[in-house]
Picture: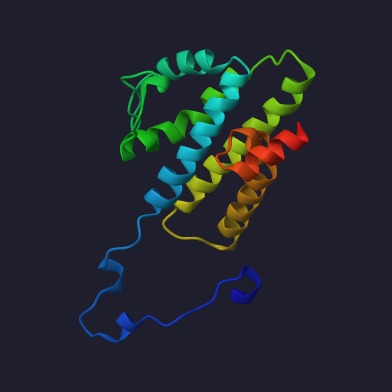
Length: 178
């Protein structure tokens, strides 16, 4: 089973110390890697995408209307006013991001919008789903499979953001496609 999932067991030197509880040791914070890193990218790409399609103000007004509920920090500033996110704000952001994008992308008017809006939404939804699965305390083959599927869908659909991604190569590729 480990071979089919690409999981490779490895020895940890700390296993052999009698008084070391491996599970009590500090771990790499997955929040920093996935949540702050990838959400920052998707936020910037989506903002640029919404701006291009004249939907950013609508997204911002939707962002301001989310009511309070347990585990959600109601934004005190508009989406466009936020320059730096804190961890708790980002976690709340992740909970409502796909909803706000979906509402902002309702009623596409042109053929390009009818093609690009679902792809944008798929990309956002896939990344948020992947991040939510990574936050589970343990994984079974089903959750690993779902994580892989969401990550694959994210990578397949992120082409919709190609022109907004930083880097000369990405901008050149977008210009050649467009």
